[in-house]
Amino acid sequence: MHNYNVDHKYKFQTRIGNWFEEWELDETKKKDYLKNRQNGQLASIVKDTKTNFSLRLASLSFPQDDYIHFGFHLMLQNLKTQGFLSIDIQERLKIGEEAYNITTAQTSQPTVRSVFVIIPYTKEPNYYGDDILHYGQHFRIVANPRISNNKTFYLHSLPQTPTRCAKISRKQEVCAIESDVFNTVWKLEYADPKIRFEMEGQPVRSDDTVLIKHSFTQHWLASDDIIYQNDFGREREVFVHSYQCLNKTQNLIAEKEGRTTIDIPLRNQEPQNLWKFQVAKNKSEQFDESVMDDNRNVKNLMIRVKQQITGKGAYGLRGLTKIFMEMDQNNNGVVEYNDFKWGLRNFGLNLSEDETKMIFQTFDKNANGKIEFNEFLDAFRLQMSEKRLYYVQRAYASIEQRAGKVTLETMGRLINVKEHPDVLKGYKTERQVFQDFVSNWNKANPDKVIQFQEFGEFYQDVSTSVQQDETFEAILKKSWNL
Image 1 (cartoon, one colour):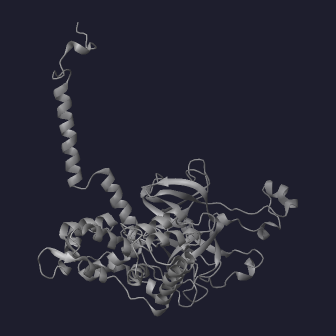
Image 2 (cartoon, rainbow, N blue to C red):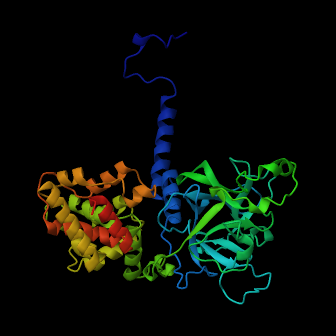
C-alpha cells in the first residue's frame, strides 16, 4: 500500500490523483466564465446592469400653484430615516403574485426607483371637481413606469398575519403589486392633530408634512431605523404601523385593552409616520423622461449624459474633466476612442458601445479617431450668472486675503466642511467632502499658486452640476466663511 504522506516519495513534477479530470474541470470553468463574461451573464455584470437600470435619473413635477396635483412625479421623504421611498425591482417577494419590496433609501437625486406618481382612485366620484389632491381624498401611489417597463405597480399593504408581515420588524408589510385592489388605496391626513379635522377636504400643499394612511387597515405608512440590506446597500425598512406619543396617560390602560378613547385622535404622531413631498423647485428641473430612453439620435444621448453627470453631485463635471486630463499623457487635450470609452466607464456613465461610438463620431469632425475632450465637455458647461460669479470672486479674494496666496495647500487649511450642505443633510461625512474637494483639483504640487482663471474654471464646472442658485451660494458661503 502506498504512503502518500511521505514528502520525498515523489518528485515535484509527478502528477498524482485525478489530475487530468481536475485540469479538465478547471478548463471547463474557465471557458464558462469567458463565455458568460462575453454574453454579459456574469453575476456581477447582471447585478450592475440591474442596479444601473434602477438608478437612471427621473424627472420631478414642478407645482406652479404650490399644490400637489394628480399625475405628479414626486419623491416621498420620511422624517425619521431622512430616506426616500424606493422600490427594489430586483427583489421579488414570494407571496403568490408579482410583488416587489419597498424601502427608504438615502439618495439626493430623483431616480426611477425613488420617484412615484400620484393617481386618483377612479372607483369613487371626485367630489372636488379638480385635479388637486385633498386631505381625506382616496388616491394611489404608483411606481415610475420606466422601472417596470410601463407596467403599473401600486403601493400595497395587507393586514398583518403570522405568515405575511414585514421581513425584519414583523409589522404590516408594504410592497408594490400590479393588482387593482382596494388594498392599494391611501389617503392623506394633516400632521397636526389639533387642526386635522378642520383640514379635511383642503388641498394639499407641496411643502406640507403629512401622514399617509392606508385606507383598508386605517394605519399610517412608516419607516424606522431598521436596516434592510439589498443590492443598493443598507436601506431602511418600510411598513404600516401607527406610532403615537404616550401623552394622556390616564387612558393608556383602556387603550392597552383595545378600547377606543377620546384622546387617541389628539395624540401626536412620531417622526416614523411623518412624510414630506419633494418636487421640482423650478421649471428647469422638470424634463421629458421619454428622451432618457430614446437612443436614436445624439441629442437625446447628450441629454442623458448631462443628467447622469448632474446626478454625480457638485463635482460631477469636474470629476469627468479630471479623468480625461489624467489620460492626456501628451498634454495636447486629445483622446482616442478607447480612452474616451474607458473614461466614460470609469466615471460611471451608463452607455452602451453603440451609444459611445455615436457620441464620439459626432465630435470626431476630422474622422481621424481622435477628439478634443474639452470640446466634448464644453457641450455641458454653462456660463455662470452674474450672481454666481460674484460669490466666486468673493471666495477667491477671501482666501487670498487670509492666506496671502491661493494654493491647494492653503485652501485645504481654510476650507470649512462642517457647514457644507451635503454634511448638514447627512449625505456625506466631513472627510468625504474634504477629499472630494482636494481630489478634483488634480494638483501634483499643492504649493503651486492657483490663479483666478483656474479657480473660476473649477467653480464653473461645479456651477454646471448645481442647478439651484441657493445651493451653489451655500456651498461657497459655508466653505469659505463668506
